[in-house]
Image 1 (tube, rainbow, N blue to C red):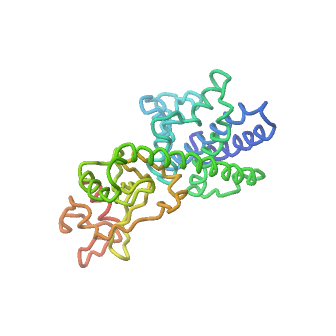
Image 2 (image 1 turned 90 degrees about the vertical axis):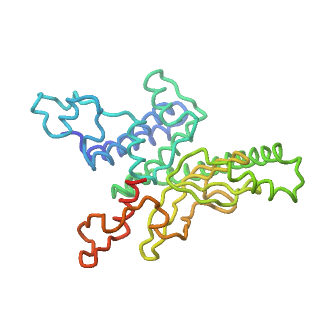
Image 3 (image 1 turned 180 degrees about the vertical axis):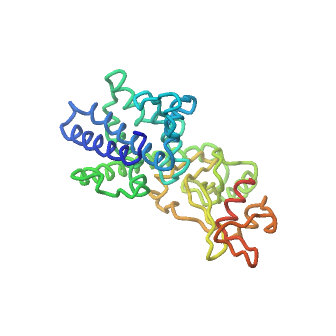
Length: 325
């Protein structure tokens, strides 16, 4: 079977080496560079999924492909060359749902990574102004996959220095974009509330806050001071249980303030003057935080739990709570 995690990872490494080689040759080879980088990213995403099970990278509506992934190609004499697999966008969506460390795609905007790959493959065209953006996007998706797959920095080989330089350039570009967002948010706030005396802002914002809800529905959220206006916004993300302290902790993925319309993506949280990328202790016990918890006596003990006193570990509780909300 060729739906193999190791083979896909090796293929990704070869495509990325070719991408960097083309990138190093200058503008005449940029089309090949961005295309190969996107292919490398797709193959590594699929390597991550295939390591869980090969069926996760085949087209769900194609039954012969599912048979092949299940190891029963003999039932319909399916050949490896006939298999239909998912495309880059779906591979990304599936992998990120399982590995939140993969950064989110820009909301409401084109995805340069997919646009570059499709443009070169189907029309021989790519946006030359997006070349750095494409490579930075690839690197940010690939790095957490390398950690998860246990491959590490050897993947980048002789191109490690170029990898580091591209990330630095990406950070500088991200800082500029973030400052643009902050400037716009400050302007929006003043347009809406600038006519109100500053000493009354606190009262007005306190009255508005209960009816202003976040536009992005994360799993859980915490209210924190907005970096662009005097209001409090929502820091959204995923939660986990700190078993030692028996409390719920939030891992931030996004900040959103509906008062000034500021939206800070996960990759930008650590670029703020007061970074918002650190985990937040919500200071609440799991049984209080997850309101729909089943009574402990109704939960089935699993291997590793204390069968003598009937207590469940917090990880088991968390998984159970999540199924009920």
